[in-house]
Figure 1 (tube, rainbow, N blue to C red):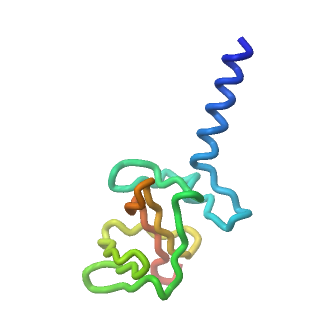
Figure 2: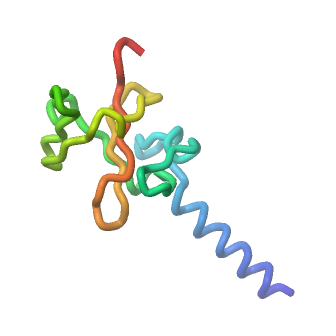
Length: 107
């Protein structure tokens, strides 16, 4: 019985580490705690798979949002309004974009 409880607690701890954002690193809890999913239907997670982009790394163009660091164009329909007013790019294990969050307007 103890081994089953230990196994359950170990799995629960590992799953928590995968998608748990902690403010100490300045990472956004709202991404990890939200129900945001990428085009692939997978949760956007948080601290280990999201990077904050500076204003000079983001260019709004007529055909989408150009991310200079990644040399990548994000179509407008794939951009989600950011809850914290910052710009974030979340990626999968291979580095491909999963989610993109950006401040819109004066919100």
